[in-house]
Every structure is written in structure tokens, then in C-alpha cells.
Image (cartoon, rainbow, N blue to C red; front, side, top):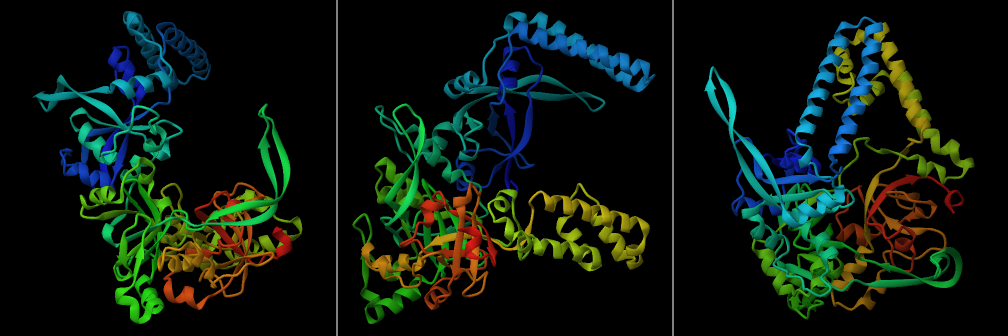
Length: 597
């Protein structure tokens, strides 16, 4: 097994169906990877087999992109292909292209053979849509035949038999939900694997929450980059806090005939769930490589955890009472604050939707020695201290600001033209297997005079022209960064001292402003006004005017890096305005309030 996971095969379901009918010679498949995860850890300990090269046949992927043809449809399809080759042959003959003629003749011969085979097996064809094939395999599983090879002589091998493995549908990953791609597992491993994914939860026969459990059960199979040990007895779970503000809005509503109407509503209640999906994790257990933020997964659990000096805060807050201070969580458990290593809310705990107790969930966490999977961390962009805007972002800005918006890009293009080292740095940051940038750098390193060669000057001119074309399509660079949001984090610390949500209003690290929304990020200077774009950027309402305000408390108790931004969620419309965002897009400097109002 590699650091990325196990190698598996991802099959096209329609070709599997046709092969098993006997109307097709082989399966269509791609090489894929079953990613490292807490689920893979479990399977490796419970019977999953792998080969010496880090592959397994115990798990496969299925894509349902196509249906299957009837005999008539297959015959018509092959005849169309055959007719097309006639025209291709004529063109090749006129051009006296012997190589192409030979190639087309082989293609025609192959099509004729396929026509003969189709006629031979015409009674075996079975037409199904991709949805029907998906339903068949979901309900009945799927058989995959693997050839057994045997050496005969002179190092020549032949197929002597087939091994058939029956697979059952295990889960459909959330990332593939729209396409319907699924993971299937060997029949013998199905029960133990499904029980683990579902955390032993059995759905009722009446009104089962199939959609919900299908979305949350695969969370523990999420691809991870590391693990962190967090004991359940050190986790404080509180009810999330809702805060409202009144504002005049335009509400898009449907009538009884399902017609959309834009209706102006006065003094409408706008809601923020201020700690939605987030967690604070004590610096004593936070991984050194986490860069201030880690995205965590476990059974029916997902949360974005931020590096926080939790225990230092409790010591300062409780003073002499620290050793005896307690707080009661949402389940009625009384905890000593000195034992709290992670603070989160019920929105992170998806198992609550299935009438499961905290003790029950805790036992499942302990089964893997209380290790949570780390899906990702905050990290600096490869572009350094700049980011590219998209054309959607540019389109919502005032035309009168374009000179200032594009100035950084214009200056950079001029620098690429005039500064050889800047151009070489650009090549280094953008080199890949499909361009010659690495070769150009190597030639310059071998002999600096290569910069003055005609070839290098021509390549430089072409590369810069392509960069300018990309710039004109909306890829405008700015002094910006992709930042991860944490909502009113100091209010969350206060909330953890007593479990009384009213204390959140005592958070004085932020105040409300008439125009801007206060925030804190070390990425930009204290007092700067910023333009913030939600990612993905949907519409103009996702554009935010922010005021970066440094706070002694935020700097003392939170170990934020330049890829993190804390935003005031109390008394603002920030969450609702941004479609309930979790991740934050580029934050751009030096736009006036007039630009984005």
C-alpha cells in the first residue's frame, strides 16, 4: 500500500453488463486509487487482501455513464462506423497515403468481425438505460471475471480459466453523488464493512433516512493526509448558537403554481448559525504541520478544527477556580474544563440525526484507538502572496475601478518583460510535464548567455503573450489569499465556559459596523479594508466588504496562520449573505466601500 492508498480498478458498468451477457470481449476500466482513510485502516485489519504491488481485488469502483444497446442498435451503430470508413478510405486513396489506407483497412476488418460476432450473439443482447443498470447492480451486486494465466512454453502464457468475484454495492461517495459512481466490495467482506460504515445503525422499515445515511456513512472513508488522537472524554459538544438580525431583503418565493416572484420583505429575520461545522482544538494536541487548521473526519462526524490555546484561556478565565471548574455539555455530561481538548457543536455530529447517544458514538471512536482522520490543512497557494481572480469576480466590480484592479497584473507583465529573474521564477512556478519550462531553466542555469539567444527570446515572447491572453480572460492577479473561515471564535471560547449561549454576546473582539463586516486575519494589516469573495463565487451578493481588526484576545488565544480568517457572525448577515459558506475565497486588498456596495 502506498502513502496514497491501494490501487483498484474503476469499471464502466455498461461494459461489465455486456461482457457478462457474452456480447462484448472485455471490460472498459481505468486504474484508480482507494484512498487512505480510517475505513481503509479498518478493512486492512479485517480481511482485505492486497498484492505485493499495493493493489487489491477486494474493492472496485463502478461508473454508470452509459446504457447498453439492443442487437438492432448495435448493428446500426457498427454499420454507421463501416460506412464512415468508406469515405475515409476514398480520401486516403486520392492522397496515395498507403499508411492510412492500411490503417483504415484494418479498422474495416475489425468492424466486419464485430458485425459477425454481433449477429452470432444477437439473442443475448439486452437493452438497458444507465439508470436501470445501476438499479440492477445496486440490488443484486455484480460479477467480475479475472483471467487465470498459465505459462506454457517459451515464456508464453495463456488463459486457462477465470476466477469470478461477486461484489456488492457498499456506498456512493458524496463527491460522486451526481454521477452515481459507487464503491463495490467483495461479497465476503460486505457485512463487516457495511456495519463499520453505518456504525452499527439499523434503519427502521418505516420512513428510513436513506438519503441522509448515504451521505454521512461515507464520511469515515474520506481521503486523509494524517491522523490525530482525540479521546471522546476530552470533547465538549454544545448546541450551536443562532443569532438573528433584521434587514430589508428581496425574497425569491414560489406561489401555488410554482411561479417565482421577487418580493420585498421589511425587517426580515436573517439567521447565522455562528459555529456551524467548526471546532476549536487545544494547541497541546494540534499537529505541528497543521498550519493552524485541520479538517477532521470520523464516524458520522466532520468538523473544521482551529488551533487554539483552550487551556490557557480557561486558566485565565477561571483563575484560582480552574482546577475545579466544570461545564455541562448538551448531553448532560459534566466535564472538568481542564480536561477539554476540543470544543465543537451538534452540527458537526451527524449521528444525532439517527437517535444515537454520545456514549454509543464514543465506543465506535475508541475502536480505532480514538484516531480522527485529517482530510486537509490550510496551506499557502503556489502563487505566493498573490491570487488570480475569476471573470465572475471581475464582472461584479465597478468599471471605474478597473485601472486599480488590473494594476498589479499590468505591473507583473512589465516585470516579466524586463526582469529575467522574475521570468525564470514564473517558469519555475508553472513548470509541468506538458511544457518546456523546466528545460529552459536548465539551459539558463548551464549558461546564462542562453538568455540572449534568439530561441529563448522567442519563447519568452510567446509565453508572455499567452499569459496576457489568460489575463484578458479574467485571471487578474491581486495581493490576495484563499482563506478558511472561523466564525466568532472568541464567542465560542466564552460559550465553552458555561454552556449558556447568552454569554456569546459578551464577545468584544468584534463590533458591528454600518457598512463593513469586521474580521481578523494576520494575512493583512490591522485596520485594512478588504474585499472578500466567497468560493465558489455565485453572484454579487457573495461579495463582502470587510474591515480587518486586530484583537489582543484573538492573537493571544488563537494560533491563526495567514490562511485563516475569523469573521464576526453576531449581529451581521454574513452567513446568510454568502449562502451558508464554509470556505472563504480570495480576500482582495484596497477596494473602497463604494466599489462593492
